[in-house]
Amino acid sequence: MSVECKLLVIDAGNTSIKFTALFGDQVLWVRRGDSYPTDADFAPDVIYFASVRSKELSALLRADIQAEFPQSQWLTLKSQAYACGVRNAYLEPERLGIDRWLGVIAAHHLVTGDVVVVDAGTAIKIDVVNQAGLHLGGYIAPGLAMMEESLLSKTARIRYEAHEVVAGEGLPNSTARAVTEGCHEMALGFLERIYRRYPTFKWVVTGGDAQRLLDLLGVSLECQPNLVALGAKLVGDERLRGDK
Image (cartoon, rainbow, N blue to C red; front, side):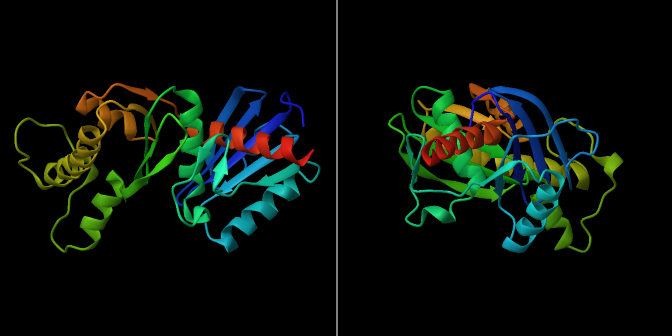
């Protein structure tokens, strides 16, 4: 498969699906949604599919996409013990989330040196990979929205409207501020501990909340919104080269 082919990367997360169209190394567009965007004038030569969803939901999504593009070559990506110069820390490599695995591989290739990878979306996921390509392991914690939703769902009297979430100075003086700022402080404390543990490592971040949180800590970082897609291209291209 030529490196100049039209590639579609499908990153199926727990709450949304991210579609990334590439031509060679160039990202043409990125869309999120429950299904392939109908207004996208793009017929991929090859599709790389990475899903953390159940086997049943992944199979349904795959069937829908393959019906849309029956001529496209399809490659389902799975976490491995070793790929693209990176060795997986997990004793059971396939149990590492494919999104984390692809993010680690992309970060290792984007940055020279030891790297902390942060993906802050629905969950806050942290992985560490050293300069030699050894994945050292990582953490998963609830994301900001998940923390707030969990708190609200498990209590009867902690309630507020969206318009009550406003910035303020000093200690929170409303329920809305108490919840939102409390969740922020928990996430920041988690990230700060990681920063203290790996003070010399470079940081590569992705996900909607990552840069906002780390800016508050003053951490020097490289923000890469397409980290998983870039990792998918590296792994998928290596697989295709190996199949020839």
